[in-house]
Image (cartoon, rainbow, N blue to C red; front, side, top):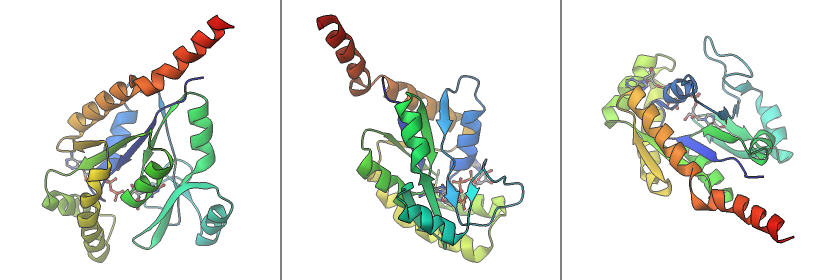
Amino acid sequence: MKRGVLIVLSGPSGVGKGTVRKALFEEPDIDFQYSISMTTRQPRAGEVDGEDYFFVSREEFETEIANGGMLEYAEYVGNYYGTPKRFIDQTLAAGRDVLLEIEVQGALQVKEKMPEGAYIFLTPPDLQALKDRLIGRGTEDMTVIEKRVMTAASEIRMMANYDYAVINDEVELAVRRIKDIINVERLRVHRVLPEYVEMIEELEE
Ligand SMILES: Nc1ncnc2c1ncn2[C@@H]1O[C@H](COP(=O)(O)OP(=O)(O)OP(=O)(O)O)[C@@H](O)[C@H]1O
Ligand SMILES: Nc1nc2c(ncn2[C@@H]2O[C@H](COP(=O)(O)O)[C@@H](O)[C@H]2O)c(=O)[nH]1
């Protein structure tokens, strides 16, 4: 069976990854899965365990790491974040596409292991927009916002490791660009060819 496409949406904190991802999944024709991450961060108001994240203790997270349960993980501004491996393996093996929304260190770990994925870096119109968006979101205090913006500078340098750069000037436009990328990725010869090879092998038997 044809494997699903792994889509990694990444970029600095505050660029709008979560906003764009949620808007993407509200589109009527979306036929891929979202990978729910695990984190040791405290839930924000309105966040639901098992929907926004799997919220766990540091001890539980470290046990998952030790058991080889994480595809990738990173410590980001004082908390662990990671992608449970089993869901990704099962979804791709079932031929379904899956989207990860993760920070840069984790995205680069996944790229090492699964270079065949589609790696999308979401960029801000400018750096001031990042800070303004984080302040506007109102979920972190200024100390954390400053740390996230400082981290963003080194993250943006890592853009060269990605396949696509999508500017998030307007959410609707960013969504359209990402849908275009996913549609193109599905047509890549290396994804389509194995199906034909299988058909040829069956014909030749
Ligand atoms: N295109 C945009 N124009 C203006 N504001 C935006 C845009 N996209 C997102 N925002 C706003 O920016 C803030 C940060 O967005 P969001 O939480 O989606 O970022 P993020 O990249 O997921 O951040 P983090 O990595 O910290 O989780 C939110 O308040 C959101 O409403
Ligand atoms: N490496 C990973 N990064 C992740 C994962 N899930 C989310 N994230 C990223 O962490 C930061 C902070 O998130 P926040 O919810 O506290 O604002 C942000 O860039 C997320 O995209 C993951 O599984 N692995």
